[in-house]
Length: 102
Image 1 (cartoon, one colour):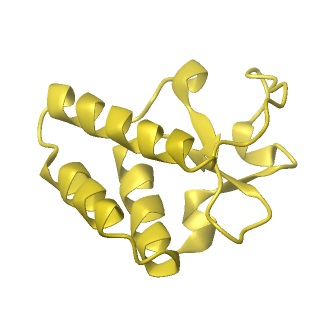
Image 2 (cartoon, rainbow, N blue to C red):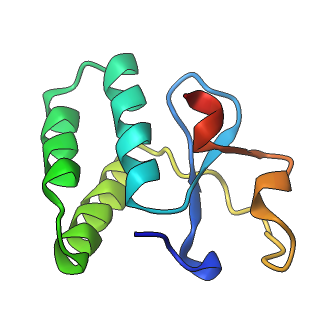
């Protein structure tokens, strides 16, 4: 499940300078796996199980909402930076693709 361009968002991993673009459920899963490696928090493992269990669009949307709430509660959303949605988001200077972490 991919987000439309206006629903994609950036997130920070702990101890990483640049934001990572989250474009859908798969990106959220990869991001959370990297996050678990950096922070050994049991709540993150529960979040990963929630993301892995998402099979329908409803459960995926719910899992992504849990993911966003976890990011917000830990302050891992970047400061509001104006983004030109007509431009390629992967070329945004403060954003990296999740695939760059793999």
